[in-house]
Image (cartoon, helix red, strand yellow):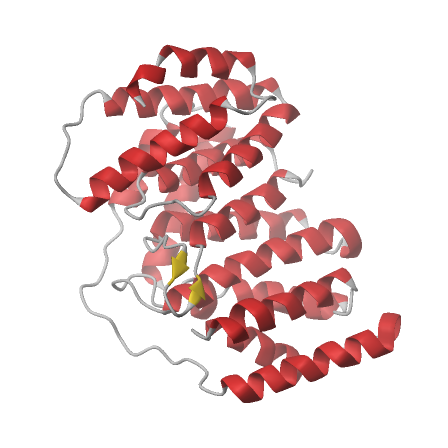
Length: 324
């Protein structure tokens, strides 16, 4: 998709400038400019989704039982793996949440996938047809495939870090750039969807970011940029992030700040920029405005109750606590 590549190019330019020391405090502003430049469509197009829920559940159960039976000798065919990934698109929570999700986790935990299969899965999840499917259209069921592609990428990154050790630095940077582009573009941050189960794109984005933070191959500038991208996406979500996203984001930021004082200082810059913007806006009579307002309140309150919150951040939050 041309627009996806355009977003990646802009983020790459910001990353390069940050690494070269050409920009620092202006990164949040520059990321917001990328977000503001995305052009969305006004009409939906047809979404092809699997309609064989019962058959898919039977196949998933059979594979799961075979893995339990075979133990360390367990394998999965390329065809079965392809079928499993395609069913992430199912709007049926039985298939997606309780079927594909749990089976894929088992495949990773038991290292059933070969190294070649792990790399193939990574490439499939990052593809336009998965991570960016129908992303420029109004709210649609394509969010399930997009969001679960991100979630499964977090699993791939964990499995690579823990068991496989096959992803190169270049591949990790490529994952970083496409996930940041996804974060910038995705507008559908619904949590639980009535009759269809979890979409939870923001939570899944945070999961991938958390795993990328644990990589030693990525530089500190990468992790600073990802911090900004995730925070701006959280800040400008029109949906109510009321399904645990606030505490999940808090925990990942706390873990990041433990790694180096640089992250503490930069997170303070992000908070200060957010606070300055809040002082200049007027209340609006619409749901999106108040969702954003209370998303912020929940997040800052979640930060304040963290026993490991750096004192520098805690002091600042106490100073502005009357405003949230």
